Length: 267
Image (cartoon, rainbow, N blue to C red; front, side, top):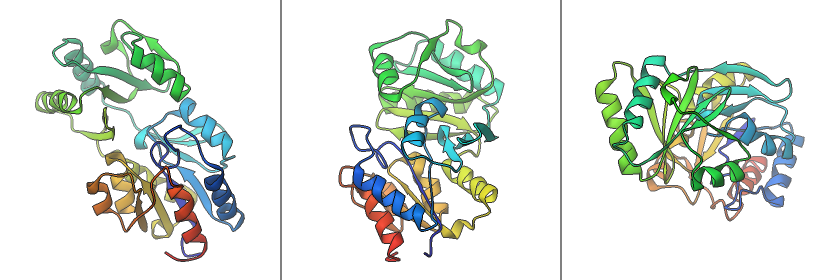
């Protein structure tokens, strides 16, 4: 096969809208791996929320988590690579949000867990769907070793907050949209694309032999950097324009379709 590794985003890509991996997709992944291919994930999820899918697929290679902030070995349960927001940038971000001028919710991600200021209806739903626990912290700015911050709500409101942070901060950072309602602040230079380059170094694979599949803004960099970039049929036009190929949607087994094309050397 021309392509040795396939890296897929989870939500909106590998998973259907019920957060399931279909039988057709699992069969294609198994076939690809049996032929010597490597299949792994690149997701905004953390260790806990990605683990059910890692286990379901019996993945035995490192996965990209937290939108590129971490590369994690699920077999040995070891963190192979990690990047944190600077303390100054995080404290500025948390303090600005805590002023209450922007009507969006905040989720703060660290290796120790996910922290919020209250358990809202959305957080209850988020915990159930994502298989995670969120801990309430009264003084969010006091936290440290933060991987990323997620704002949930109207994306335009979140982006106004991000603009103010950028204006006031002397520390650069990366901002991505990972869902219609999710805007994320990541360490500077960190994307799924930067993590994919690092993962290829770890696995000793040429990035030209990698297929990357995704559907959102946070997938764009890995789609561009991979040897063959694939946008899902349900992706935005900006993502589709960045890709070499547009697959079927996540409701039409788009990942399975791509894997079969890789196996049959149709791409």
